[in-house]
Image 1: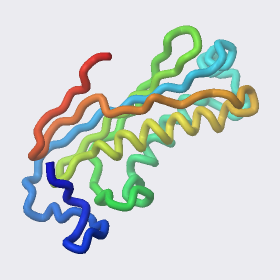
Image 2 (image 1 turned 120 degrees about the vertical axis):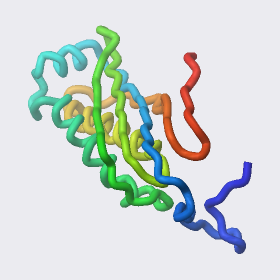
Image 3 (image 1 turned 90 degrees about the horizontal axis):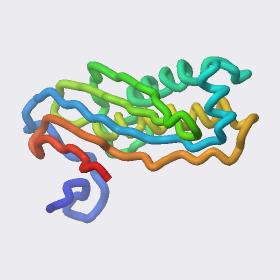
Length: 158
């Protein structure tokens, strides 16, 4: 596979996507935040002093997806057509965050989905750090993507 993020001098460049077809593209990413059972219980009960953790984390994920190209140097600014953040948990000590990002364009939204769930997880940490500083974020991964020249991808179950 040839990497396309380097010019003829071996220096980093943003890939030119001008000649790519415009297609519908979707990416789904996920991450987890491992925490003490008491922390998860308080998040679910809305008993965190800074406010509704999941509502704020969801907004953070949406905002981060929209700003991905501002802090990932080679990402193209994209007109995103949909961003959705979902939360679930194992009922004990792990909060799961899944983000789905959509666009119709010439390049995919994998980085936007990964950024969305990362920002949501960091927001959970920020809002709960007074209660627990040893929370662990991750693993963070791409679950699936659709559209584009490389076709669809679905992560195999582990």
